[in-house]
Image 1 (cartoon, rainbow, N blue to C red):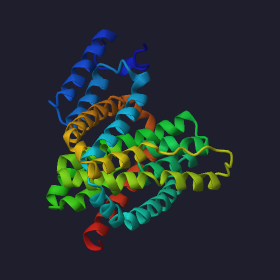
Image 2: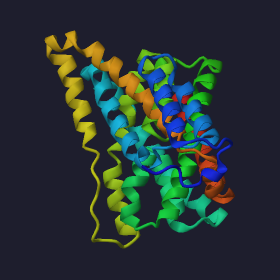
Image 3: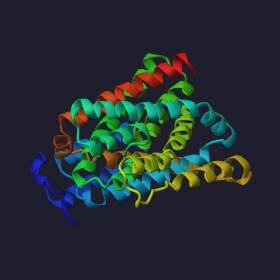
Image 4: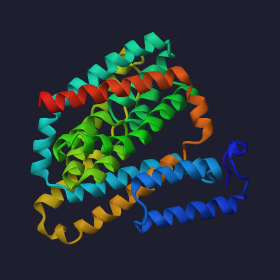
Length: 321
């Protein structure tokens, strides 16, 4: 098993066995719900920069699996009728926010003279669902590893900030559970941080945020097709987020199969633990090299685009909804 490639940036040089022991300890704290999702994310950032990440080669696959598993598990704690009503309410706001974000992202990319493909990946990641959208769009535009890594770096950095900032702002503005859930789903990039922030705010916010965010994630498909046309790449395969279908099945089972109520709370509990571990692993990708590789212009594009969609969606929710 390989150690982290750029171990020279670690503050403390230790053996791979010590790195593994530290990782195992923190994962154990997550499994026993001793630490919250935001703390898990913070510990991931600290650990990777102090000691390094001994599992860097497996991090991305583990994050993808655990996030999808956790989202499906959360479906066992949701009511289908309520979720459908929420999704319907957020539908037009979702469409408006996606296309306004893509347009403003395009303009910002021109303004900052960001690489065209990197700019589009940042815009799609902000507009739809963070890292998942970037992973789906990157093969469509045939971006290289550097372009994809920069876009992911921007999204993950801002994502991590959102997990702490959004609940604070929500409480300062005294947002209702419904309004905060909608705002999270629209304005936070990645599903992991959406669920983490909403879960911190309350159970109703969690249900609303998860439902609207997953409905939003389905826009990966039409945006991928539109991207293929814009980048004149007809021979491309579109990635479909199949786990969203499993989430819907879980929600339907919880709503219409009474016996599921016996195990549903336990499944939801395991899903929340899975989310905590996911956020720790996401934090463990944010080493100093990630921050350096992003660059000033792509980061500024991502930051201003994020501020734009956060401000626009909050205004729409408070005054137009």
